[in-house]
Image (cartoon, rainbow, N blue to C red; front, side, top):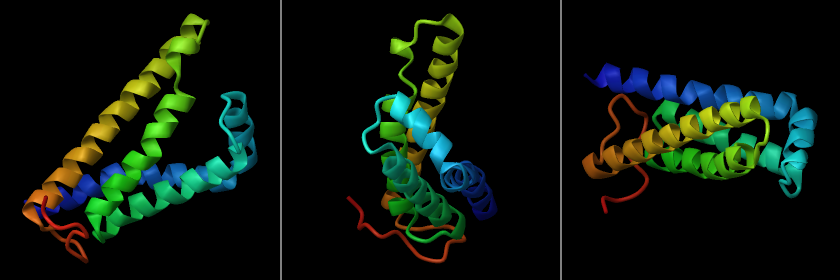
Length: 138
């Protein structure tokens, strides 16, 4: 079953690593969109959030301090979800639906990251990981 945990972590993490690549390669365009959504210091926010997503994703893939990596993913997702997918502000029905789908997807990802954090913290093990958890059991 350890391999199932490894596959799950990798599949979850790929989304964030690919997103981070986009944050670095298309930073100017993403910053313009973020500025339109009233994100302060949009370019810095895009690059900074890319770094957080990359570190969190790599943590899961490599199995290095997965508990910290899961919390980094939550740290990435919370502001993105609230600031970039503000469906309650959309007037156009299609835009509203698109933002609501992204908002709900991010809520599910936050839930998955929190479950991963909980599992690793409670068991104090990382199956097929390079390190154990960073944080002691709570």
